[in-house]
Image (cartoon, rainbow, N blue to C red):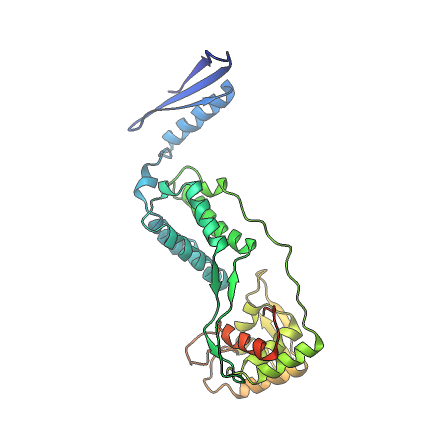
Amino acid sequence: MASIQRVTSPLTGGISYRAQVRVKGHGVQGKTFPNKKAAQQWANSVEAAIRENRYFPHAKASRTTFAEAVARYRGTIIKELKKSGRATREQHLDWWLEKFAGRTLVELTPDRIAAVRDELASGTYTRGKEAINKKTGKAVAPQEYKRSGATVNRYIATLSHLFTVAVKEWRLIDRNPVRDISKKKEGRGRVRFLSDQEREDLLATCAESDWHALSALVLLAISTGARRGELINLKWADMDMKASRAVVRDTKNGGPRVLPLVGKALEAIRELKLQNSARSEYVFAQPSGFPGPYEHFDAHWYAALEAAGIKDMRF
């Protein structure tokens, strides 16, 4: 049974209300509020949680490691996502796992999460592997990127969702600590157009790339405006050469989308199909022959950009 006590400050004379609830195994739990109504509401919520076996002030959280929570999240939540979304979430979780190794859920306080968030925002990362420029013979190192505010916020969103599930479904903690940290400011976006000459130079260097499919990929990107992930995951079953179109089945919005195949892009795709000696199901297959699409083609892309003398350009 809860008790509400009226408390008068000896210094200011102000009135507050102290709510107390006896919790088996945890002694008396109490909290002070500025008015009686708030105190009663808190006491009622604690008593309801006790009746429903939901009251656990840090007990389970102190016994559950972050790694265990991530493993459970991966086994239940992540596996239900689409392939593209699943890979991104997995990447985010790997980062948090490395930083919170050996920590229990109760140790992941807002200040500790905020410190790791700032480390994430200030660090850099690379894509792809080192490549050789065919014209100069020099090695082209993968380009370094600094994570944008939007990217950092996506990492935070993944962590926040894990904690939300831990609160609402698993009953491991009673509050999501990520709610108490701020997000990073997101930019207004970035626009960079190729000039006619840059486009010609880029297509010329792509045609000479060690990865022969790069030219078709770039032509398709220019002519359709489709996203990188949409193009790289295209399968031959999605290509209707007679109708000159391709169907993107896994879009950002969830539904399918039709891409027109025209001009040089259509010619390049036809030629690529003839060269598909490995008989891969993917249009842009891995040159090594391993199954799956060639997702990490960045070294070839940057080598083509350097050979064309183009700077500050993303795929």
